Amino acid sequence: MGYVIRLALILMFVGGVSAGGLALLNARTAPIITEYKRLEQEQARLDVMPEAEFGVFVLKDTSSSLPYYEAYADSDLAQLLGYVFGASGNGYSSTVETVVGVDISWNIIGIKVISQQETPGLGTKAVEIRYGEKDSWFQRQFAGKSARSVMVDKEGGEIVSITGATITSRAISDAIRINANLLRERVTKKNLTGTVS
Amino acid sequence: MSSGAELIKGIWNENPVFRIALGFCPVLAVSTSIKNGIGMGIAATFVLLCSNIMISMIRKGVPSKIRIPVYIVVIAAFVTIADMVMHAYQPQLHRNLGIFVPLIVVNCIILGRAEAFASKHGVWHSIMDAIGMGIGFTCALIAIGTIRELLGDGKLLGFPLLGNSYEPVILLILAPGGFITMGLMLGGLNLIDARRKRKAGK
Image (cartoon, rainbow over all chains, first blue to last red):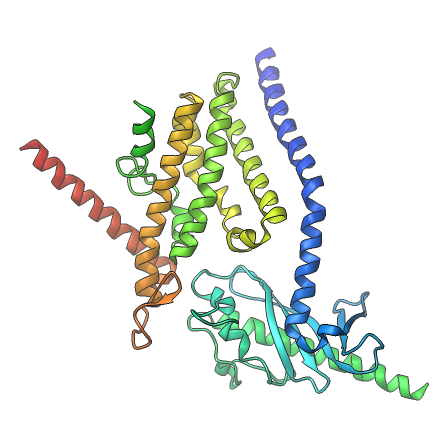
């Protein structure tokens, strides 16, 4: 009996030391990681809405399930450039998260996949940058398409899907289409009530 | 054995993938390209080194009955440390290697070396063993990755080598292709070894 207790105590000690060490390290690294993620998201917003480089992004509808940003050209909020929103869809082996920038007539300015864990070599081609190029060939083709009707070629749309990763391609374009339509409805409704009152 | 021999043995004679046949899960998962292979190799070598050092240091204080749970706690702690430190201070590296880090936990090479080597040898030899095994693991990943990336994607290190007219064999990028490539390489290496032994016997 005493032997068993001794074993348990040793195991507890090892676990405690490891957990304590990790907690200390986490306290140091967690704020840096949060800050990095914030910067990364800021960068993603600018990537999909380059015209707002000297402007501002105003976060709207934080309480809803789909918050979005209004992008303005200047800090005086006079000229609305468009909207930036997130779109996440179920891919083959992970949730694919995309940031989308659209102009005021809901045409896509740019998209950026910010998080995915798809099959290496297949689904990950969604973020692949070909040799000698600067941006992802898959994401580039979304620019200029209408966010409200964007679809992969297998469903009659204009997006050339990734060979061997139709599910990933579809997850991205479907999420963008669904969220764009949802948001547009909400934004239009808001504008209507605005004119009445 | 000398420390040099401990280092060398992991690369060929006791190659963790092709000889000891450990760590197949991460090998199959990330050997789709050379770049992935190198990333996984470096991440696994780092954790292997840390866990080998730690375990060879505490080996005399750990009762043999609970050694496996203790090793697992030590390995899991180092994996988490590697993940957090990399995420905070080397975000660019974490973006590239991040997906491999959780996979290291299921890498049986690390537990295998802790149990088979570090728990019976001193710190210095354990360091050598970890580095050798890490290099051997990385080499195996690169070897399989080269074949799968070249034939399955027509590229080497992302550079389109075989040109646009080459139709990639997608099977090789998928899991079955990983099994086939690894099986053929295992067989090939065994053949070389068998021939060598027969020659030596004569």
